[in-house]
Length: 428
Image 1 (cartoon, rainbow, N blue to C red):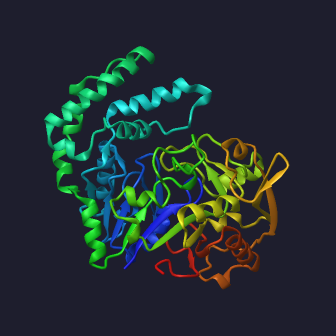
Image 2: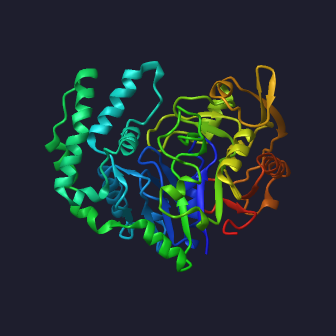
Image 3: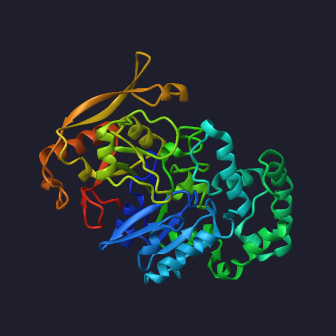
C-alpha cells in the first residue's frame, strides 16, 4: 500500500484539508510533517465546519491515526485547546501520536516573533506572530526544546536557561522589553507533561512499521510550495520545508518509501502576507474572488490577496515536488465569469519567461502573460462527474492540465466533502 505526500501547489489555503479528508477512509495514518499553528485547514463534514491549525486533518476520520511528526513545531497550549474543542464536539482524539523529536514553541519565542515584526516595520515578513520562525531558528542553532525534554526537568531547565541567556539580552537591550524568567517558562511547559506523555512515540519507527504491514500513510504538508524556505519566494516564506521532500525529513520515512505526490491547486490564486504575487488583482474582480471564495485566513482571519490562476507556478510545483496528481479546488467560485484569464508565462523587462525566473527580483517584476478561456454560467455545485460539468468548465480543467504538466485527478465544486468530481483515483 502507498505512502502519499500531499502538498499545496501555490501559497497555501488551497484546500489540503479537504483533500486529506477525501482520502481519509482509505488512509490508515495522516502525518503532519512541517509547520505549526501558523496555518489552518477548514473542513466541512455534513454541514459542520471544523477549523484545524496544529492537528492533522486525519483527526476527523474514524479509525485513522493522526501523527504530528518531528518536523513540526508544537505550541502545547494550542494543541490541547484544539483537542478539547474537538472532544467537546464528539470527535475521538485518543489516537493522536506526537513525535518525541518535535520541537516545542516556548512563550519567549512568541514574544520575540511579535516584537521583531513590529520592529521591522515596512520590512516585515507578514508572519503570524506565533513563534514559528524563532523556534525553527532555535532548532538550527541547537538551542531548541524538544517534546522529550518535558520528561526530564533537569534537561528542560538547562536548555531554557541557555536559550534565555541570549534571548533576554535581545528583549531587554534591543526591544526594551522585560526579561523572561526561567521558572516561568519551565512551570508553564511542565503543566502539559503528564497529559502529553501517553501520546509521545518514536513516530519514524511507527510509520516505517505501518508501511511494512501494508498500511496506507498520508503525509500532509502545512503551508505550500511557494512558501517553502528553500524553494519558495524567499524571504517571504515560512520557516520549514513545505515541499514533498520535507515529508521525509519531517517524519523519518525515507524517499524510497514514497509512492505518490498529490498537489492541491486552487482554480484561482491567493496569498496571505507580504511578498510578490504576479497575478494579484487590485480591482473589483479581486474583491469578487475574495467574497465568493470566502478568502479569509483560517488561523488569522486576515483577508487573502486574490488573483487569477498561475500555470507557471503550477508547472514549478509539478517539477519541484514530483507531482503525480493534482486536485483542483473551488472551481465553483469561477462560475458566472464571461472569460477567465490563465497566466501562461511572464514578461520581465520585455523577455518572456515560461518558467519561474531564477532571481527574486525578476519574479517581483514579472508581468503575467494571459490566455483567455471562455467561462460558464451554469451552477456546477451539484455536478458529480466530469461530463456533467459545462463544456467550458471541462475545457478550463483540460487546458490547465496541459499547462501544469500533470494530470488533474480530482475537481472540487463546493466546500462540502461530497462536492467533488473524481476523474482518476488518487491512490493510483
